[in-house]
Length: 337
Image 1 (spheres, helix red, strand yellow):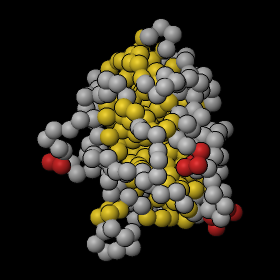
Image 2 (cartoon, one colour; image 1 turned 120 degrees about the vertical axis):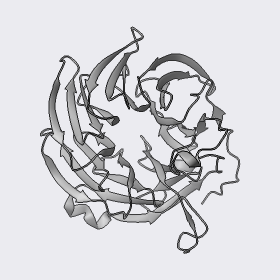
Image 3 (cartoon, one colour; image 1 turned 60 degrees about the vertical axis):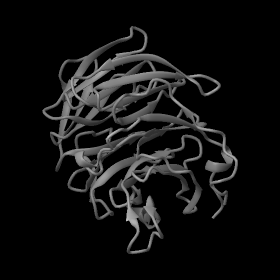
Image 4 (cartoon, one colour; image 1 turned 45 degrees about the vertical axis):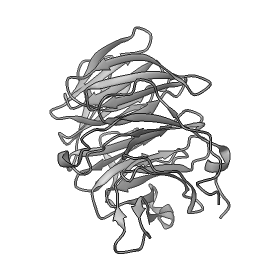
């Protein structure tokens, strides 16, 4: 196993980061464009150059904190959602944002579904709505058990995680009827859900410094397991400090994954061999969100307050940063069991 203090290319800071907490990061699937949403209502886009430097390309605003973003599969549009209850669409060609979605409460997560025209938006109003960008009204709406906290898709699978720890799975061939509903295997509030990049399952992260690996097909349930992470002190120790798991990002090539947390740390893992691949040096603030680029050669992470300790826990002076970590194959490739 590689040690954390072995030679590692230096992480590069993104130029002109948001001036408030970073809520989401998303790389384009077709180019080296990186988008970020932040609590000061802004959505920013940079181009990552070949040497790792960044050039600010665009910025637009919501009328409340911007909470989530994702690129269309063809890279031509960026969808974002926020606390203004609106979904907005940025067209790379025209440089203009337009509103496409509306909820009765903040949009916490959104994902593109099946091509360039359908977007699913998940909200604290306890619904998922499916929008055809060629129409004014939602195509359909799904009632949830509670506020949606996190949502992800892979292929025809959509996984939604709610405030009541319920997790609901939908097949996009029948997107309004769940094919399976379960309670989270983790005991405390769900922070993030992320689908395997290889399909067939998802990972759940919670505020108690735990991750659960779950397979969608019941016949594969013997592969389900949970593990502790993002804790100070021995994981099994009663006096260990426990931190929220804020991001779970699966590598697009190898299917391994990274977790990032309120402790300011991020770690690469191999779920199939149940191994920790590499632990990276901790940052001075929490890592609020993170993402791999399209080929997995860059891991972007946001160093900013994540509100895990409420308003009173916010540092008096904080410098938000988005960092680009060069990913070495030896750090992220699967290991033999």
